[in-house]
Length: 128
Image (cartoon, rainbow, N blue to C red):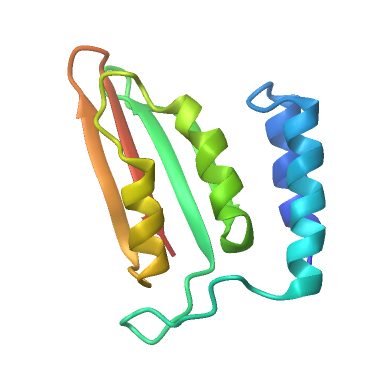
């Protein structure tokens, strides 16, 4: 079921300029279709829990301020990873395909914790 919280997250990303109107439209459409079809990743993780969301956070290491903090429902992970990849600093080694494989295998917890010392940014990705 699509929650108003999920819709508001997408609309907030649009308002903040982190996604375009077209991307927001695609996300909202995918969210509605996902809720009708049911969860796409219903395999329980090793802990016995089913992953519910993917979180991506980019932090400025100099100021310790969060620059990007995105939570993506598991039903939208493939599209969300494509969009989230644009926020990853160029100098940080993050393999989106590797993240997709970890999610497909049911892995939970932190998947990526990478730092770009030159650019002063830290990227974290985890599944909850």
